[in-house]
Length: 465
Image (cartoon, rainbow, N blue to C red; front, side, top):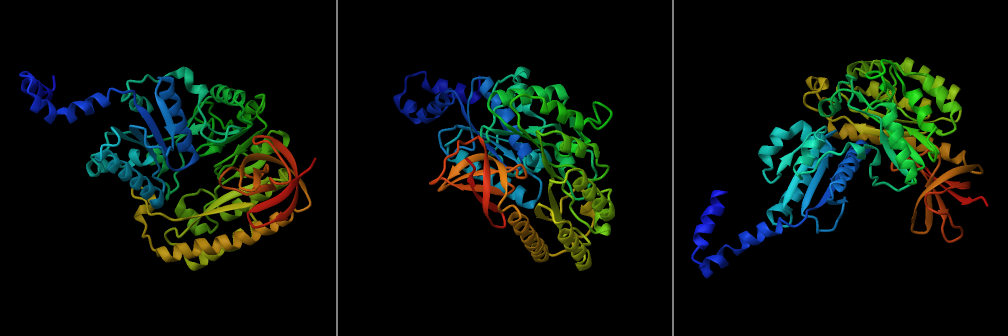
């Protein structure tokens, strides 16, 4: 028996009312913890983290726990924070969130605080010393250990029954974990480990389960989609996976996120062109276009090879929506190198583009390089690149005015029904707005929409009856 409890028991043996009252709060606290836990899972970071949280929630609920996701209600007594550690801003958000709940715990409003995810994986030792209020820290692949804190068993039969926290008609499907690439700026392999593909059969089972529950659109995600299959099938098998997923009844859109341009398996373009269920959409982060910068980034591709790849993609899939991201402020990015990037973006006219500012991450190869682009200049360059893209986006959207597009409707917001075309992924891309006062569409349904107006990042239209 705990020595403190033994001490209390001895004191109370004489039915001392004073002592009973004195130590009453201690016993009330212990009694409260016997109540069935309610867990609130807080997710930070990318869609890959979201899938991890969904799997965690599924396992806890399978073990009869009451679990909520990103809830603002204060009735949960256990908090699990699933952190992101990708760049400085993401790390700061994760730390701020942990500290917020650590304070809530100090005030006695929650019983347990657990932290998992990328930040925990990478900085567990330092964080343990700095934030003692956290009861336990877990890495990205330690779901069974986290479940053990709840005396919960990992139930393999739930693998294909993942709960989704997105709108019920779309879901993310993580096809692999980790990354074998050696990009000098990226800390993801430090947090997620090497590449591990999920078997096709397992992914088809998960997709089938999602489809039975009403999911119509799958967003395929991974650290690196095109590497899929090399570890378990000894060759790149993304095309075969796409064909298998397209055969799942109920799935109507399959969208590809996070493809690596170097050694790109070009047969993927053939599948996109030939398979109606695979969206004419590709998210392929390029990061830069200046050859000297690309070499220091260890991207294993040149600007010229990238231009040829984009040309081939647009030749094989004429209606392809190409999304990319660029990284500005990398060590040694001169004014001339940045101008090279600007000229490239202007010439390539990407349909969708996002920009990150370089974050100097310890233990990466680039950390040995001087972080010689000032923060103010990084921000200025990011804004300049986005201004170029804004003009391109407006021009491309204006070309859609007068056209009728197939739209999947996600929600009603204010005076509009809001949906997306085949060329738009949730959260990051354009949206289509249809006035709700004039027409009606059911959320989760597809509809034909005549585009009547266009802005830089949105389309307005009316339902075609």
